[in-house]
Length: 377
Image (tube, rainbow, N blue to C red):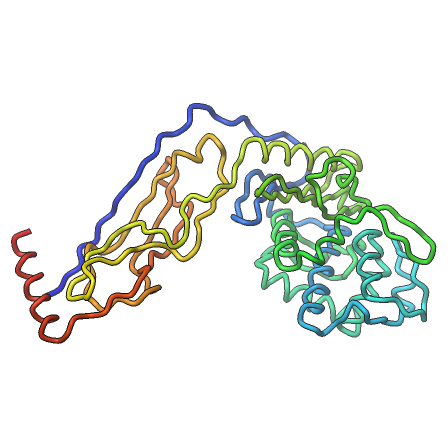
């Protein structure tokens, strides 16, 4: 008796007349330029190739620690006792001494700002009892963050052929730190830290280059080469760049080049606002004749500036609905397509308000009358 007629409506907007140039050719092992809020990969090369990440491993150590603090299992005021293993850690250190107690807040700064391997191990042991147990947590978190090509085997990034990740996975991890733990992330912008009378500068020289940079981390081993994750924000747009297998000074130039390209030729923009009426739907046998359809979340996209205005919007929804209607119930789909007709975003269309049904006799009459009208339409 009551049938739904599915239709599609398309709205086209003319494209811009210019094309953006090719991205910079960095000539390094792998890299990625990523917009974390819209999860868009802007530029990449070998983004899924596994490599040793050196001290970029500490980004995951940092994430686990921040989450344990958030959940109340660890406090910034905790003072774990430094073990022999932490004290003897080779490579970069914050110079903690065996048997002494060091605040977690200091260990975090020592790990992030000074890239202290000793601090990383001390934190790992405080959370999980041993570095080996902590590594199990790191891999669990990597799986939760969809870091599908990552496998950690230590908390520091010291050379280990089983300690592997990718440029894309590091971009996902960095984005999660920024989003989930903004207060913790502020440690990555601190330019120096002093512990035990020893002051060490942050190894991330980007912090001195431009005020748009607010983190994040460097890394180096012979196998990994010189690595760097950088993040910058200009206006409402944030970008994360990862370069792996570069050279010492060049890695900073590489990230700067990616950032310049991204901010110049891409734009993050709200395309459709949530809870805005996108279509009015006829209601059969309801106390209101129409109900509005919209989306629950804004559609925000990061796109090249030469294609951002050449999108099409496709609405797939019934032509009418039988009351009752519940606000928030899914009614159809809104799809965003690029100029080639490829799907780049999809959201559920929902009813923006509720509509009660008529009384039983009025309802029956309304349904019959709607059926009769449909025979002549």
